[in-house]
Image (cartoon, rainbow, N blue to C red; front, side, top):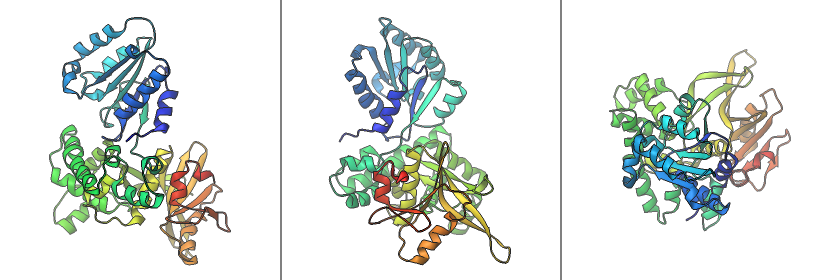
Length: 413
């Protein structure tokens, strides 16, 4: 099964010859290697780049083990450069290369090299791009398949596709499997044997049971405000175990660095300031989230919200949880929540995730926080089903999850 990943391929193409190291990051199994070594390489070949001017190296392959030694790899690369024409260097899992920052910086000084690398977590790559490359790195972050990308390969209607996608997510290897049993087994093994062990090993953590408990608790409360203090109290009351707030925070930070989770901060819209805690945590892929809780608790309200968050992030928006403060007739302050405040440059959208609007009371409930933002930025409510996008009398756009996900310009309707 082939996936076009056009959004990310276009980003790579646009960054050619920009004098920076192109760093492709993302969660394991999201398609980083496929993007670089299949899609981008094929593009180069079709563009007329000679095959011997594309230098590839996958450091996680046993056959390339010796090249993890920088004193072996660097002379090898220099030896592959035969002329002054443009060469493309494609490196997979570059964090396995010893002293990779110094090696890449040296390669960057060669005028006819254009360098592209992949890695699996922020700890080894994104942070180092900032601290070690000092402006010489350019990150392209890749996510699991969006629903639109999923539907390009799905042999069925969008309704059946939605049911499949919200249950098993968009990791390309999972989407390529045929049976539900295969998908479930793959996701459960991937989490247990790859993600958890990888996070524990990279961060020198020892409490694997605690890590699993934290993940399960976050998976069960997707879309809920929480923080280490609340989670610590939950462990004491539900599991009768004591896990300190600092330990919980460290474990969550490690899961975010590995791209398994992403946090959304609360933003006071009228006060124009961030509120420290609590926050919301969303899973990068719904299949991984559902695998954590054995495919129970698959209520669409929370899954809908998580998928909307992921889609907005894929489209490049910075996404926060909005807070609007109001006073009742007695002067008592009350906080209303807007699910997502989305910003990109001067653009801003306020979005509510509502599974359904069965009556006028529910409509007013969803509209109320949107009507008190104090500005004229576009306001949108996304529901599970709607005949077609429509506007309420006060100018709020209502659309179905299908219209939102399958049209990249849906926020402009």
